[in-house]
Image (cartoon, rainbow, N blue to C red; front, side):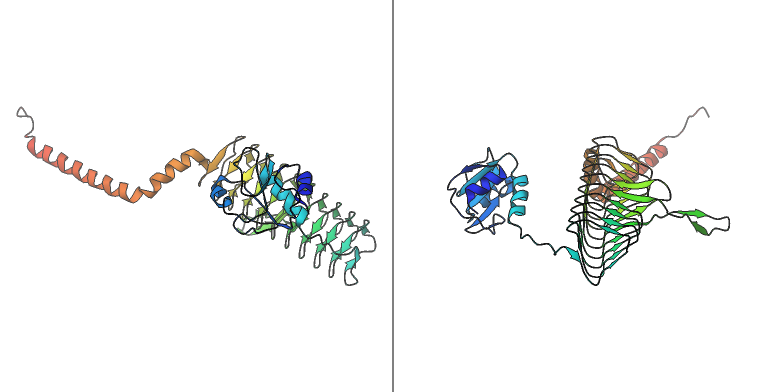
Length: 350
């Protein structure tokens, strides 16, 4: 693709030779002739001076590069779109593989692709142009929207609702039973039937082996635009807002409400029945045991204000040294107290 054409498609300002042929997108250090690279982080400015790329995406106000430039307000977003332009387009052919099992009353939209060993249950529906890769199970009554991509080994239990343009990576389980038990008088536990549903709204992506449980009553819901990484556990009855980001290995206990635009770093644990305010951020490995105000940024366990946690973490590293100093000071105080007592003859009037 000519660089000038790429500039038009990315809505970037071109500086340099627009007739250069671009064949792929690459990192600054790996790029070679014919590649488009990008600079979104100032840490890589020095690497840009030695790049062999034919062109670079960079900010409007960035210093000039030694190659053609595509200037934009947000080079990282332009980079994401450029990768999409050059990504190979492949999708399986529309139709139902002869080794798939589709219930007679299931509904398949136009252009749907159903792979080998897929099971589509009674009364289920799959929207137009949705791709279902091999070994997927779609339970009875489950509804799937248009233009979804459901990768191999996904399990969608009964009566689950999936919106449009949803991407489910390998091994996702939606609608598994929530963890609910009532304690009997003899100390054993009785299972609470988990018979409600899960709703995944439009434009959501769930990473590999992520699970979203169904509750006994009500619903578990993930709102539109939310992106969730691998190995995340969403408990029963949880409500996740719009455009939320969760990194790998996050766990959210049941009945917690997560508002729009929240960000959870990797391995964040969130307790049950909490309210997480809009735009709150929990940095990696935080343990959130209390509700968070909108815009809060917390760290540590139990999670506290991130600035306070960073101050406290400096002290943590010095605890062994401080313990020795305190013990030495206590010993000196005890010795001084003993000497003072020995030097005091008491009141002669006694």
